[in-house]
Length: 478
Image (cartoon, rainbow, N blue to C red):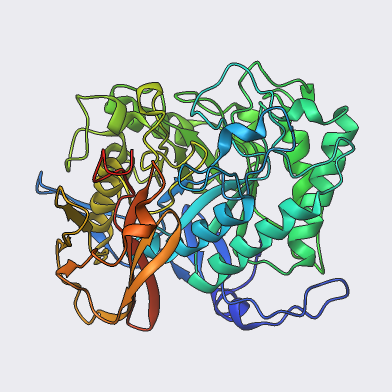
C-alpha cells in the first residue's frame, strides 16, 4: 500500500479499521510500507537494527530487507480436464486444490519461525515442473475477459488472511507467461489488473505488494503489454487505483540475470531481480550496483524473489559465503528461494516448492538448508527437525528422532499419519510409536507415513512434519 505519511502515522496503519465505502470491515493486523530502500511492517523496518556477522568477519545490515521464497502455487488448480489428473497426491491418488491451500497455510508459521518475512504468490502460478516449454493446463485466477474466478480468489483470501495474522508480506503476482494466453487481448489484461487491484483494496489488505508479471523479458508472452517495453503501462495502471488516497506498491520482474530496463526502474516502487541462471555470485552484486547507478533510479528497495542457483550449482551450496543468497545480503538486497523438483526427482514428493503436488513443509534437505541459513542470518530460532526410523517388520515400533529442543516449546499434539489419515495421536513427543495395532492401515500396496508435531512457541502455533516416507516397510503389502 503506497503511503506518504509521517512515520508516526505509519505506525498507526496496522490498527486502523478500513471504513471507507467499498472497503472490508475486517481489521487488518499487518501494514507494509516503503521508505527509501527499506521495507517496514507496522511502522518498523523488517529485521530492525539487525546485522549479520558473516564468517568473513564483516557485518552486514539486514535492517529493512525482505527475505522471501517463491511459493507461487498456493492457489493452484487445473481447469483443463485433460491434464488435471497428473497432479494427484501420491497418498490419495486424487488432486485437491483446497488441500493444497490448507497445507500451505499450515506450513506458514514454520517459515516465519526461520525469519521469512515474505513470499511470492501468483494468480497464474508458475510452471508445475519448475521450467516448461508447453503449458496445456489452465491454472489462472482470471477468466478470458479479465474478470476473477471466485474459487481461486477464495483460496487467495485464505492465504492473505493467514499472512496478515502472521505479519508477513505477500508479493502477489498477477500474470505468468504460461497462462497469459488464456486472456483474450490487451484490454482483457488491463481489465484483469483492475479487477485484481480492486479486489485487494476492497478486502482491505495492507500486507500485499504487486508483481505485475513474472519475467516480462520472456518471449513466450502473447500480449505485448506484458513485455518489458510496455509493462510500465500496467504498473502505472495498478498504482493509479486508489481508495481514499490509498494504493498498492507495484513492480514487475525480468528473467534471471537481467537488469531491469529504465522504464521499469522509473515506474516501480521496488525493484525485483531474479538470480536463476547467474552462476557467479559476484554477478549478483554487480546487478544491484548497476541498478543503483541508473539515472532513473531513486532510493527504493531491491528484492531478488526468484533464485535456484545455490542448490543447483555444486560450487555454491548453503555455506555462509560464496552463494547468491549471501551475495544479495552483502549488496543490501533481499533474496528469494526458488525450489522445484528436477526431472530425476519427479517421483520425490518431498522435494520442491513449485512442483505440483507440493509438500509445503521443510521436507527435504535443501529446503531445510535454505531455512537454516536464513535463520542464521536473521537470528531466528527455527523449528525442530523430525525424522523417523523404521524396523523391517510391521509389528515393530517406529522410532522418532528430533534434532533439537526449541526453548519454551509447548507440545499441543503429536500425530502419526498414514495415507493422509491421522491414525494415532499423543500429548507428548514419543521416542517410539507402536504399530502392532495398525496393520489395517497398511493394507494398500502403496502407503505413505509421516508424523506431525503441533506446538506453540511464545504464543505462536507452529506445525512441523517429518518427510513423507513412501513404503517404509517395502515390500510389506506389495
